[in-house]
Image (cartoon, rainbow, N blue to C red; front, top):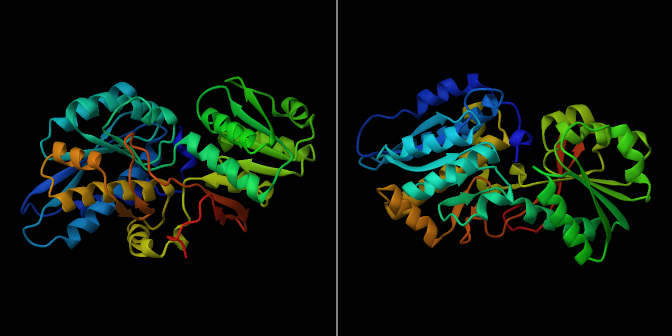
Length: 383
C-alpha cells in the first residue's frame, strides 16, 4: 500500500544529528542493519522517517552496549520507489558481510521487488508498514511484516463495527485495484458472516467525480459507509457524502489516519471510526522509555519512525539473544520463531511472516488530533 497515510512530519533536517550520533567507535565487532527506501523523489521525507527510527534504535542499543559487546550501524540505500532498484540494493547489501538483515521499503511495489533477492541471499527482510496481502502470500520465508495485513484489518474492522455500531445497511467503497480492495473484500466477507446487509462498490482506477457518485451510494439509504482508501483519493468523496446530508457512521481505513485528514476533513471525522494498525502509544506503559527516546531524538514522532524503530528492535533482539554472527543465523532464528518486545507491543510471527495476534486500533478526530476509541481485540498491553 502507499504508506503516505503513515505520516506526521519529521523532516530531513532532523536526521543530521541523529546520523552522527549513530556512529560509534570501531571497537569490538560491528554489524550492520541494511535499509532500502526511497531517499530521493517525492517520497523522500517519508523514507527519512523510516531511517530515523532505525537510527534511533541503533543509537540506543550502542549506548547501552558494554565493552566488548557487538555494536551496530545503519546502511540505507535509495531504491527510488522502484522494484528493480530495490532488488539491486539487496544484492549490494548482501555483498557486505556485516549486514545482518534489511528493513524496508516504504511502498508495496519496492518491497515486493526486494523479496526474491532476500530469499536468495538469506537476508531477513523486516517490513515496517506495508500492509498489502501480497507481501506474505508468495511463499517467501525471509519476510516478516509488522503492520496488520489488509485482509486481517478488514475482518477485524467489520467485527468491531458490528459490535459497537450495529449497522443495518453498509456500503463499502474501494478502488478496483491497489490499496483498499483487500480491505473492502475482507470487510464484506465478514459483514456477511455476521449477517449484516453490506454491498461493495468499486471505483475504476483514474479520476472520478465525487459529486456524481454520491447519489448512487446513498440510493439504498445506508446507515454506514466504509471508505477503504486514502484521504488523498477519497477525501473529496467523504466531503461530498457529508454535503449530501449523510449522517450515518463513517468507517475509514488507515489511509485517513494522517495529518492531512485532520486538516482538511477533521469536522467530518468527529464521529468516524478510523481503523489503523497504529496503537495509541500514550496508553502503552511498557513502551514509554523507547517512545521518549524516539521523541527526544527527533523532536517529533511519526508512525513511520515508530514502526521502523520497532523493526530495528526485532533485529537487535534476535542478534543479541541468539548471538547471531551472520545473516543466515539471524534468519534461521527468526524462522524458528519467538517473541520480541518492541515499542508498539510484543511481536511474534507465523510461518508466513505475518504478525501473530495482529490488531487494529480505532480513532476519531477530537480537538485537532486523533482520539483513541478502542482496539479490535482488547489487549493487556494497554493501561
